[in-house]
Length: 254
Image (cartoon, rainbow, N blue to C red; front, side, top):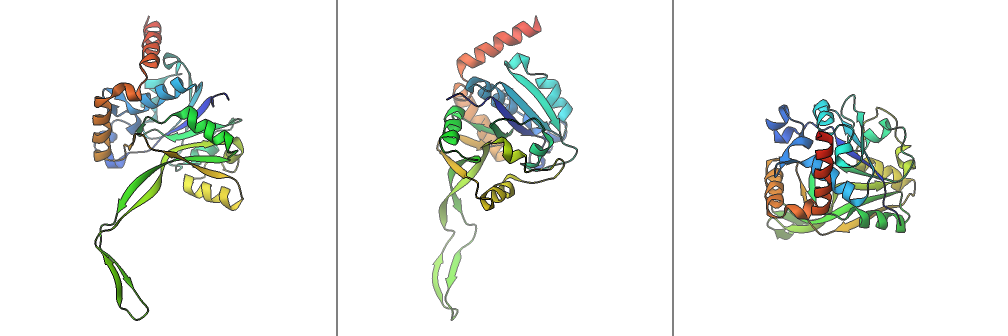
């Protein structure tokens, strides 16, 4: 079963929770272990067999384009879709008019050791319209939770209870007709798109993942990602793929 060859990466967010850094540098270029987080993602996808990446850019997008160019030094093709204004986590798909095959859609600001090939196999075996990579987390309430009966008597009082929930990792696999449901320039987030598919009785499935997943959405997440990468860099950048990329970089520089 061949690997999915195309990915769309959402790299247009302003990253306000990581200010002031993102005032002068787009969040996808924030370094993790000296390597921009988006470069780690691109190298991982190339190692998994992806041949083409479309970067959906907006805020400081010209800096992203300057860093990645046409992708040759990373061993794949990179092109760009420019957001005229923030379009959410699914809206950028509506700006891309040549999605003709299954593709990976994902956020740029995450550090994970997910097996993209296994994710794509899972999607294809289940014949899904969309697959959402998911991760189990403990969600703890900030308050004590009180249950009350019809007479106002307290039947249960639990102080800051915790529960296991399954959350989206911001990584999806979608079929091309999913993007065709979107209009160019219309802002929409992926949860809303998923509900549209579910109401249309399309198959939306959840891929369970239990490895490393860190969302670089705020200062704490950024620090955790930097620490994880420093401990085990080769867990996130396969040594063979990294060596190949260095060789290509030297050829380009030459």
